[in-house]
Length: 219
Image 1 (tube, rainbow, N blue to C red):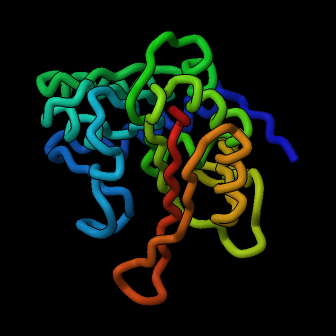
Image 2: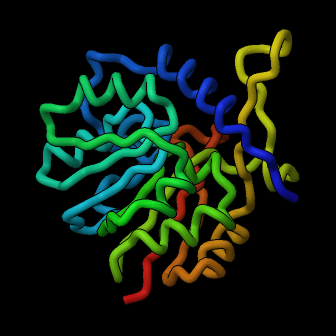
């Protein structure tokens, strides 16, 4: 099953998100889960010299790494968000690019020691297209890691999402949801090694956990 992405519409979705999600007073932070202070931290990436966040949103994770001496890059589809975060975090040394992830990874000549997605592009791009492109931009031994909500049981594959209500002109995007086993197989089929995907339990029993995956480019 495939989905047809209209990137003009999806850019509008994320421009709207940028207007509501960006908080100029927020500080740099690096959290894989949606719960503050819960779960692993940036140590998952190893000790990278250069990183790329896919779907970097508010840029706080990129700024966090940049403040610690990493050559930290971020990519986001929304030009509105990229303008905001460039203005906010330029003093940290963070570098932000605007673009569609598959095109960016295909046309870029840059390589990285770690590429990651925190509730970002790994949830909103077809993994059969995304994962091989991520692999191609990683240095040998480089780490790919991503986090996002786990699939709703029985709802797998691309899931359409209307944004901004159900009246008027349709504005929508797609997310991709699979079981941890399926995500792991997609990583291995794309050429990654040491792939592992699990759901990190929420700090409160019975609340929504976090799907978390890691893999390594072969040396």
